[in-house]
Length: 177
Ligand SMILES: [Fe+2]
Ligand SMILES: [Fe+2]
Image (cartoon, rainbow, N blue to C red):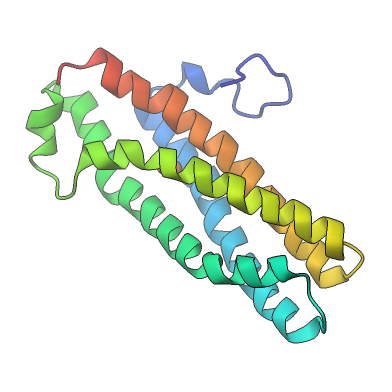
């Protein structure tokens, strides 16, 4: 994480406790992601309706978007309902990772690894956003769609960095398995 970058809004985050980091993530990045994904949903539908000869990337995006959106909503939900409560309990109980994991359904390890998949998806969406902007940036609805996609991926990159480079290593590095 670029903690020294003065433009990085989360530069104080490394000083937060785990519980504070999770609360920060939920009230900023998780909330933002849910809202902007709903907006993107609407923009894709609008673009498909309004643009007469759309670039082929609109169709490619529309095809992958439903699953991408659904998977991301599920991921946010699982973090809030399973992974983050597990981390909180780990912090508070002083017990081992596996002991605490037994109280939770779902695979914690799998959740920690899920981020690798997100990075590939983010790259794909970023590329589509660039292509939509290049080919249709003069069409208002495509310009808005491309811009929102870029906001989403920028936000996700910061969000993933906080989780993958700060929060999760703290858990995996300091506590006994
Ligand atoms: Fe998250
Ligand atoms: Fe995550």
